[in-house]
Image 1 (cartoon, rainbow, N blue to C red):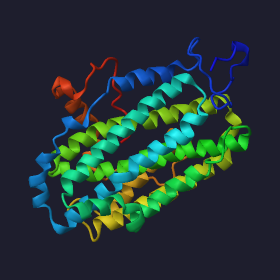
Image 2 (image 1 turned 180 degrees about the horizontal axis):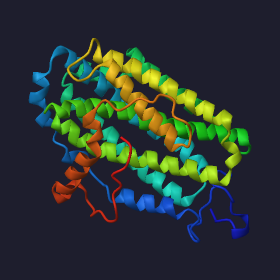
Image 3 (image 1 turned 180 degrees about the vertical axis):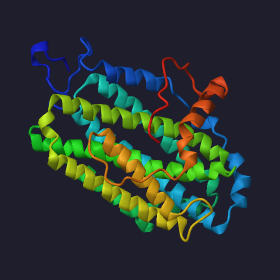
Length: 342
């Protein structure tokens, strides 16, 4: 396929087409995100999950229930994100620089899927238990509700081959925002909180090590998606009206509700330092952060009740720089922003 002549190049990021020309570079920030992601390469083989096996034997029945539900969600969560990335984002974000980053993100999602596969093989040695975890979308109502939320927003753009109209572009934006703010930015962050709650009690350090790197990847995925939203807002500001803000706000409220139902399933009557009420506050705090980042008004006004999540950014960076060189394959250059909302 040949590239189009410069006069025919799309003017906006969501214009239909398949731009191939990297020079002159129209969106250099996306290319820099791709380069930064390459520096964060890690492999599942570097995570020692077997060190968690003695800890699993120490867990109470309530804690066992929580961790089994959590790994069941992990079993399919990243696969849903990867499917949407290929079927929707790569198709409609018309920038070769952005598609480089999306290609890298797809690799990272594959690593996450492999990590969670290894996690299930280690944590659930019984084949029937593993089969039940992989079938969680069909068998566990709280996980099925989250999956149906994801599929609703995937289905909303499934038949769009080209973003020809403003209505098409709004539908795409809602899909992008759903996966960045609600799924990667809320569902996964809720899951990370459970992991770091165990770590704060000196348990499951292998799981926490792998989650550190997944956490770092997901934060970059979310930041890239928000950069795409910022670019579209600059190019087509008329798409961002009160109606879109209300749709995004309602979407995040629905996501908080689904994740809170998951919390009720996991926490039951409550565990030491982890219960449905504290998770509700955390989810509302995170949802407000996502709305603020998108330029919309927050709705909850809740504070983060989990001190171990406030420290997560610093702890992850400490682990990043102190681990053996093979932990990340390529040296890190540039600056690291410690102000990211967690």
